[in-house]
Image 1: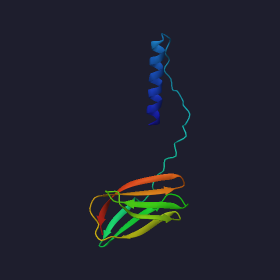
Image 2: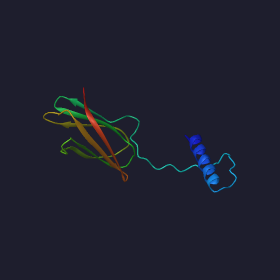
Image 3: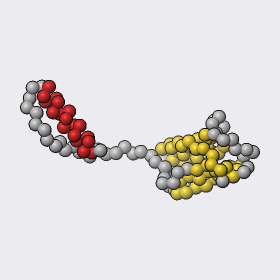
Length: 125
């Protein structure tokens, strides 16, 4: 990817010099390394939502060690879980429900000024 970027910059500079009527000299242009944007990511294990009879089991990992608000809602927007969680690493929450409907659910984690959102589908236990 980096080599491709350098090649594209070189070609663009060559075309610009050619358009201006100057002598175009091809060469390698070294650019500085850009600082990557801070992209919030979920921890290595993907979040899971499992149907366990009259309960849903939500397994996830918190990316940071500070306090977090975890929210699970169904496709209609009904909130099934909203809980304050402390600590980093793997977490499991059990949600009692009369019946879990198949479909998409949304999990949100708000922690340290970052909001992560994931769509989940129920897996069978």
